[in-house]
Image (cartoon, rainbow, N blue to C red; front, side, top):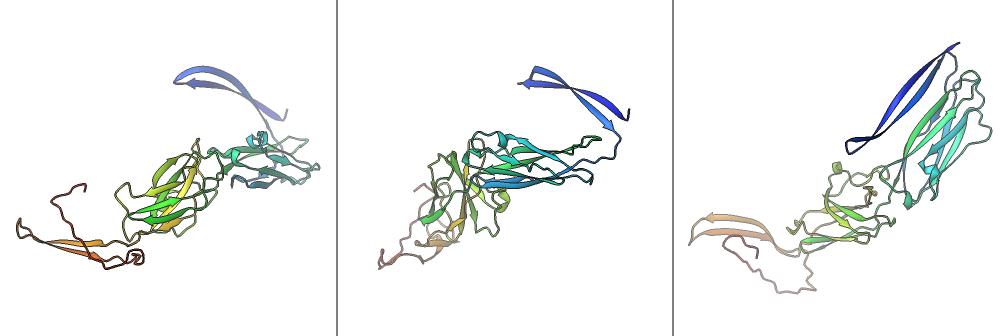
Length: 308
């Protein structure tokens, strides 16, 4: 007969909370031919784009057999079935080997989600000997744009942050990240969402609410350190766990408008004649127009540590 046939049966079990609630039997027939025909090869790659951008991708199908005249190239998947701005896939009517199809998708904010979309392309060589196909599935991730215009300004021992609300109103809140010193590299948006930990940033706050676009960083009440250069990035997040690209970096350091204690040395330990040596650096960023002199220092001490 020139071919062999094999049949395989699958049993599919459906579970819920550890209990089988359903089962289905499906069979698969495999036909093996001995022939000189070769299947076509599809060329397409995974991609990620910012919501609002347009995907315009050329997908090709090439058959290595020179006697192949026509190739049928089709596409299926979630983006093609959407009711809001669905994707389209267009193939020339002649379909002469090689064939090129155009996948186009005008994305918007409603398409943002953590899980990527799958699109499967199928190429059929229409052979009169043995009909062979190639199938390739790509993943398309739609990423939320980064919050715009992050700003930081020092106030006392804190730094106040603010940014614009997300361009996509589906955001449910924001995450604030801090790093000591500026990051010298580039975060690869849109294929890199959030702020990966290996860039040296630490998440310091999660703010719920679309319009919650400001934060006071006082190091959880302990105060920030004078002389440190603090840099921040903001990320919008969504109900399904999706995250936007990270915002641009904004950096600030505390103004040195107060004296900073730099040294305390115990010279003599004694209840009555004990001696401590205290050293400090003078303010260097004090606004002398707002706070004109003359100036003096007040030194305070206490027995033990209190909250005062």
